[in-house]
Length: 282
Image 1: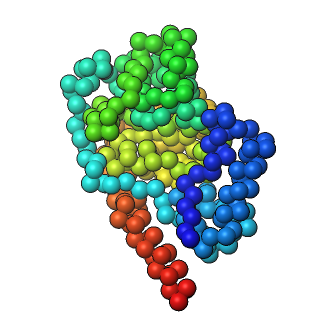
Image 2 (image 1 turned 135 degrees about the vertical axis):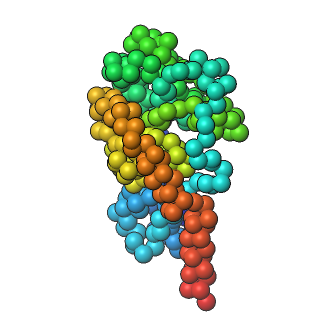
Image 3 (image 1 turned 180 degrees about the horizontal axis):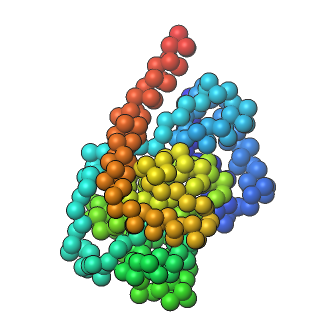
């Protein structure tokens, strides 16, 4: 039996508000999964943060293999030109677009991105935020935009079909991943920054553990202090100012994905595990 861990159920439940850290349900869920981890022949997981947590539960490091999140690089076009028709449809023609594409959960820190926008606008008056997707925080984010008097500078595009996602990526100048620091984000690496790098996009991200495993500050993106609105705004402005570095950052991001985060390389690692286990059982 090979058991795969992509996150811990109990930590996700805390963010979703269906469980309390350290509560009865939290401890029962954690205990049940630890019971399973100790009895399987091997464990795979998507990042070093999760591996460290698994080993801390008493599972030998030799029985845990990291097979990181990956993308199908062939499905993402590097340097795709902006879709002018879509940009006009969204009311973003001639604007500097800071975007997020994904689910609107509290741990994503999108409220921090809205708080940072007025600071960015002082230096970049044509800056706009584009939020593509939906989720539990959508209504709160729309209300926050009105409260901050930036409702006309934030575009909520709603959920889009998977086949259209690249069109929306193409109209974004800087992608933002302002995840808050909590167990879930410190331990787990997200997939969206990989998709961004595969397409050669510029990005800023909070310095939570999951992001630090993916992004080299100043090389494949810009990291800022998690939970710090001023640091987020400064990271966006730093990137927008440094035009000379854009080509290098885009190219380094794509190279990182091609070298280390493709589905073919991930699949090969599973094969090694299965063969080794089969041989050990004679």
